[in-house]
Length: 242
Image 1 (cartoon, rainbow, N blue to C red):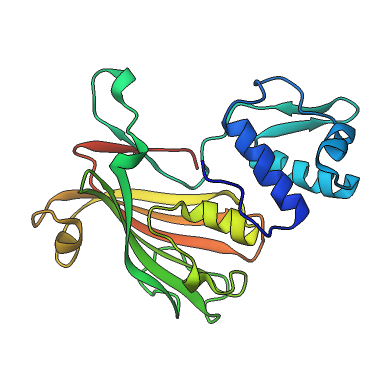
Image 2 (cartoon, rainbow, N blue to C red):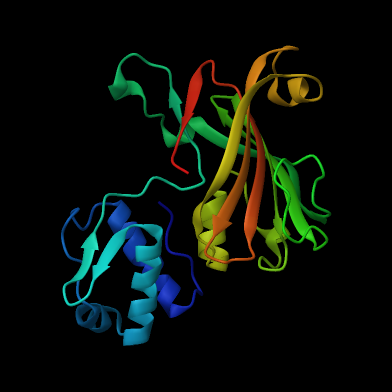
């Protein structure tokens, strides 16, 4: 897990700090987080700042707040709207891949453009400017999926300056723009690969691939992420919760 980004608002810096502690297992599932008063004393922050950070953790599913009792640590939430990769091994103990085996390659850097007409889900405000970019997810140089993404530009100023190679897109949204993925809708079906997809994914003509179209909602009502994704699942499978 990366270090807490610098120059964040106090509430978000605390949120990132506690979030990393929860992921690392500093607090056991079912236990209480330190009280608001204890957090105030530890981090020298105001009560509204503490409450804002805790509300973000609750919104993302890391804790559950109970009136008069405190914040109870929950099982780590599976990344909403995100896909993780597993290998097809008969031994479940060998399913998890090493982080260094998985790589993200940006094929087309973020750019402002009209909403892509071939995406399955249509935006509410199609005439506003959108950021669009394309990426590959690879395991040991084998392409697992090719993804095209589009989202409104107004809430993510200077997104084109963000470094996206080998980084979580939703981590960038969260830490840089305070945008948290909430859920959404997706449609999945099988199709056959044709050019130029065959060249991009490095597969033969007519290779079976999965197509996933996603409309991903966030904590900002007008900021929706649209994804069009093609995946090869012969060697690796995709898992997640949406």
